[in-house]
Image (cartoon, rainbow, N blue to C red; front, side):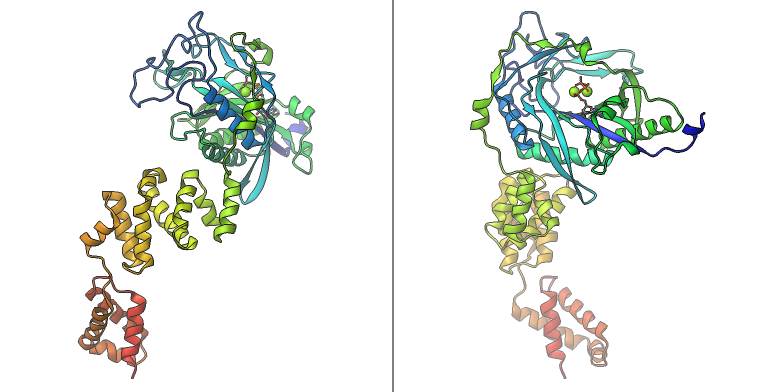
Length: 496
Ligand SMILES: Nc1ncnc2c1ncn2[C@@H]1O[C@H](COP(=O)(O)OP(=O)(O)OP(=O)(O)O)[C@@H](O)[C@H]1O
Ligand SMILES: [Mg+2]
Ligand SMILES: [Mg+2]
């Protein structure tokens, strides 16, 4: 080891992501096969000559996929070209029986753009290189689960031809945590656009690129010049299917590469595989160069004019804008505004409740109570979207003081979710109607009469005695009296 490598160098990680997202369409991108799996379908049943790549079968572009891609482009602030084209990317691997993937090359549907997100309370902006449309390959099942030890592999082409969008970022990330925060934001935006179904298995897959550069190469703005980026040997980690997986794989790669460099070894430019169960990346092959793919024009698909689509398609209000509007229009704090805009469905639900009640009360009920109880049950807002009227009538019962907040939260809401009951039915079944003023007053009188010692203690200045008496009244009214009112009534009655 030379003297130079023996001392610790100050190193920085450089990260760029290629994110493959399945666009939500009814049918595949180049044929009429369904994209919807019914859960326990047999392999290779949702297929036809086109997605099986049989000779002579001709692709026909799905308009739904183009529309979704245009939405994504608009949300990213990309440049949408007048015209876009498709290419064949040639490679030999059993997940694609044609031996090429129809994708885009020099005229992708989206060029440039950026995404802003927060990480550790700081705002970051990451550039988008481009985003293009392509077909998803089939899926491989390695016997025993591991690609490097399997004896054989099974192939299922049901997934083949699902519309994919590959969103390629600039190498603008400097840490694994940033990459993860970006993925969360991207997912949120895609979900708002209605082009992405997060619950679909494998709907988001990431290739994570990482290289290490000397910290001295990083400018004041975190910028690194193109020649340095080009010269740095990067690894591309494939097979990552979750945000958390991406963060873990990148953190692993960062440590592995930094250790190699600190020991004076060079990092090899290669493709690596993320082994989720072992939590490590393993070498697969040297990184293919662009020329290996022999890209050429897909002659079976004519160039597509996107200009008309771009004009016609509008996108909804995006998460950041909606968050800001919630803060201003409804006077919510940042935390509630964030919670209530976490998905478009939650935000829509909240706005419908806020239309009927005081927005702050609506925020407490949706953000704290409802989302909390749903989360606890592994349910989503979409499970109760149809029950907005019932939910509103629960808030109404509290708002008009007919039941106590405690009973509304702990009894009514829970039984609504667990047993599918309407709030009125729960109130009746559990006899939760608030005790009227007279019976509370009577219970207060009784508590004073039955507990002379506590009364004496209270008069002797012991505040604890009052709490004891409040407890007695609450017990006598079955918890339906308002503790604050009981407290006041007792003080009044005990005044000398
Ligand atoms: N020095 C670097 N360190 C880390 N990431 C880098 C570096 N230079 C480029 N990248 C990132 O690598 C990714 C390159 O993706 P791109 O799709 O353009 O090419 P590719 O990976 O060679 O092609 P393929 O789609 O065939 O895998 C981008 O996300 C880019 O930001
Ligand atoms: Mg790529
Ligand atoms: Mg790549």
